[in-house]
Length: 115
View 1 (cartoon, rainbow, N blue to C red):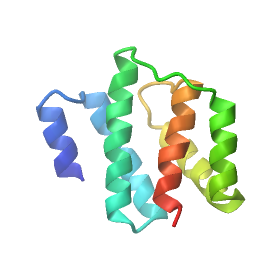
View 2 (view 1 turned 180 degrees about the vertical axis):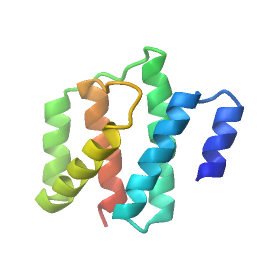
View 3 (view 1 turned 120 degrees about the vertical axis):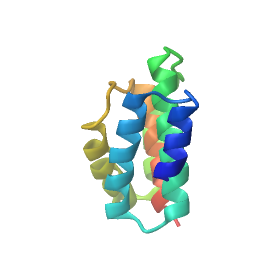
View 4 (view 1 turned 30 degrees about the horizontal axis):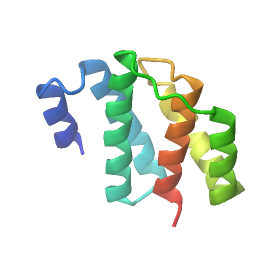
């Protein structure tokens, strides 16, 4: 994963801040899941979303509705795990994620843990 992120950084697809955040998020995610493929997909998405937000391109959505829908689909246990992990990851973020983007992160991160 780090190699892929390095390629994205060297190709100017993501900047140093997004790279550093993605690496820290990857390290956190590995503590919670052994699904390397799903983690890698999520981390790639996270790095790209971070850059998109830095550029001012924010995806709009009803954040509360989306989070409620995700919670109903994956259940309380998975959602609580995702909430804990995402809050740890966000501490390393170079940006503040808007509510709509935050909700989409929950959606994508739930896919890592949902069987």
